[in-house]
Image (cartoon, rainbow, N blue to C red; front, side):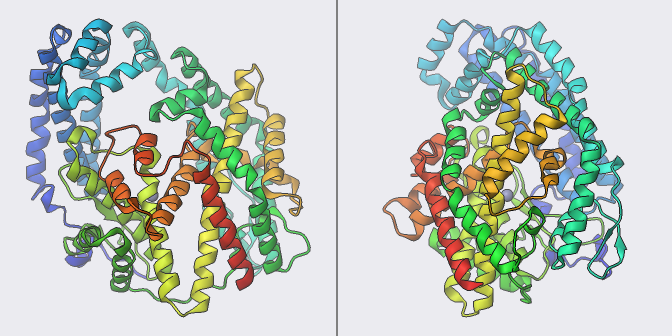
Length: 595
Ligand SMILES: [Zn+2]
């Protein structure tokens, strides 16, 4: 298929960025104005701590600057993503990025000056009604005080950031550029190149020899460089431990959780809840084994689809109809805004030459919450559309209901709205279709979602915790220690029925997420929270819908766990994850009956 050039794409299939800027010339005007915005702020340097008025003035200007930069950046990045080959927009994006770095460094004095204000004065400020909307912002600054060092020490830490990033850069260069894999056999028996990018495609092959061949080639290659990968991971873990200790956190895990103000009980509770529900996962593994008709299941049998390819053409207009119909349980107002997303062209629909791959939702306080997609006429794309619109609706409602400073929701809760909308689409299609093959596909899709998002990510989260513990207790991460730890976890999570090829012990070496500093557990808690909201809303639990919509409109006005708890889903209690996993158990039973 020949892809259209960006200039050939019909306007109605593209996003309308004109509410951001009517023209590039207008963008240039705002870009040029950024430098001037700094001037009144620089006058506050050295006198910031003198009065509450000065402090409030500082917060106001900083907020305006942040809002303006984000607007300028959003336009450049969206324009650039619609055609990465367009050098003009690339250049605009580069310019705003360096401008951002420049402005940030010019504002670096603010934090230490605020932290130098005596505690007694801060207490007076907190009791002064003049502080108004800025109270939470000041609280956030104060929360950091115990973990912020002297300006001179902070300067050293900032200088160390670049050299400290070497391990993850080396990992990325090795696995994305330099690492070469041997050719493997494809479905037609021909030799084919194996890459990190196409590995999963081989594992999805119906031909077991193809899966096995790719699996062996992949892990033999990683094992061959096992000492090198152990060294990059070891260095990266040491980096996190170093920063945690430097900033006086109890552990690297605590330092990471501090960002979202999440208590470690939530992290540990997730792992414990998943352990308790491993039997449901073993059941799923059993269904898989039966469906594939193999005597013993191996790790290279985990990705091959259990359900025949669904030959269902879903044009975009049909997807729109389904997505709008599926969100009706969230109320007519919500559904109307989703309609608006289509009518006002928030969505950039199809692939074109040079367009960024994948899908995302992005925007700013002064724009619509746009969606970039590469829509294909299939059911997977409909789920992606529902997912991204979930993000966009979350942004839309938070922006509508909150001042700029509190409109941006935290990553910790980001996947709740998107996953919930996928769940609504799932139930809508299950309830309104008579096509049994489609339903089997959907149930399998749901099981895969839990498998990939809750079980696998929790296993990753447990591994991450374990390897940081080893380093914090004075140990070292070698190829052997890492592989042994990984192998044990893999055995625990997949159970005795899987006769795992020993090579799976090297999987840790290829997972980029282990360089993301305790990030992956948020996928698992996000899906669990979404399932809990979904259940409450669908069963008509009193106040459930109001609570959920309130959460969507609350941005970052409180800590993420508090926002969820107020809306009725308290992740500090183990039953949220437990309930989600009981739901999974039901889907597994259903899948077992269907295949
Ligand atoms: Zn998402």
